Image (cartoon, rainbow, N blue to C red; front, top):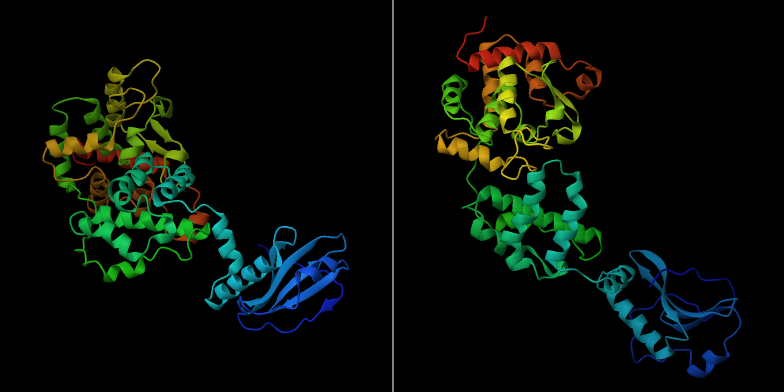
Length: 410
């Protein structure tokens, strides 16, 4: 059903739109009269229903109605396939939809579409979005969390039939026991239902705001990653070096370069220039989507050299996992920390580095932020800054490596 443009020509009995009309109302047209209508124009049956005869001979039904404050001409199909009785019934049903506040054109379009269930919709959304996610872990976890927590209750439900009560039933069992996971599941359910709304599969976006009234308040957390005090890093690094494995070398690399876990785990030999003592990370692996050059201290270079004995032929990864062509998993590094009873996260070593710079050195904050590949919060300053402080960062990373080795800064 689409809005129609009515051709010019004679019009019979055209008046204002009137009410809903009704199935039992007697119209102005008859089956016999319809056969005789050949002159181009529009012929009223009453209550906004017209037969439009086009100059080329086509004859189509149109309902003129007031919808959303605008007068619209809504096509009901050609006379050859929609007889007078069916046209009146279709017009009646459309008037009912308008009286209920619905847009009949959108409703007809929605009826023509096959509404997917939540499982089908989630897989489509995941397929459309994953290319924009730089973090491979996020790509896999996005769908796996829905498979674990949402699909058992929502998977077979049509996206048009999912409301706040159904979402609450998914979240309630994990809302307090796994608060972070529950929040991610809620956000991902919302993304799927918002997509369904935009596609016309449901009339509203995800009802996430009302969920807060049906779920208990989660305990607040400070939002920071568990970090090791920088004063404890040298002793920890000594313990870490007591044994050597590809996972321990990767964790040592994280500490000495202040890099993110994923940047180290996906590092490649082709990115490292030992002679120039730099590691060039391509934009697609960086959180900000910009290439980043990491100056390497002699201690960091030593980590890469020790990793060479684990190097496999035709594999460019510096820190490969059990399957040589795949990188180490994030859980490998976390397990090392747990086995050592460190009580911190991998990411927390970046915080330790930043605290050390602030408390123990005279380096500018901008240099430390550049070392962490953080964005410049001030947009004006970001627009004018052209330096990445590479040489200053080189000195900084050398000082940090000496500190981690137990030496005092000069």
